[in-house]
Length: 216
Image (cartoon, rainbow, N blue to C red):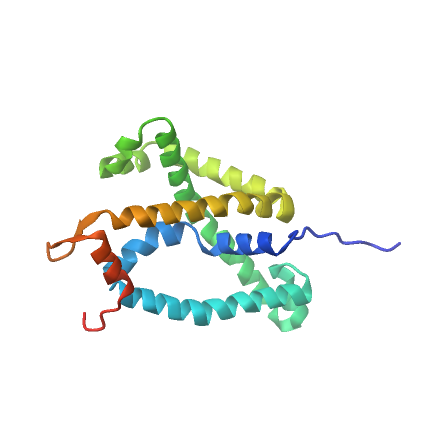
């Protein structure tokens, strides 16, 4: 009897693009990227980031997509299907997400905690460093939020590509885009003090962010 292997697939290009963007644009770009850019040269850091994204990043992305389309296999078995001696690459490709999953779930738990605090009217408390310190040192609470985020992630993955990952990406990614645009415009209205103690406007900081200063 013929065996049919039904695999969950994306329903269209938009769903795939949003899911791919969600896997690369997330907490790191919003939470970690800004202060690293400010600390490591502003425009110079951004220039190096763009060069690496267009070379290594784009090459790896298109390679993974091409391998997936050709083999129609998961990362675990796709490389072995291309060449019998490349099976270890598939194992490594699956180990990397497993290793970084706890890290992202911890940060995701923090985000959910702050989001819940804002919804319950305690947004003013979260701006102080003492609030974060008291939260991460509290007995059991960070673990609870970690498990909540991990459970939500497991539910999305369990529902499959079409009804889980794609469906959530179609909602979350547009919301994320609106938030990023809103935060960006709000940042331009702020003033900040640089390392030399000089107070600058948000527009001046935007110029430092975009224009590389190779003499700095």
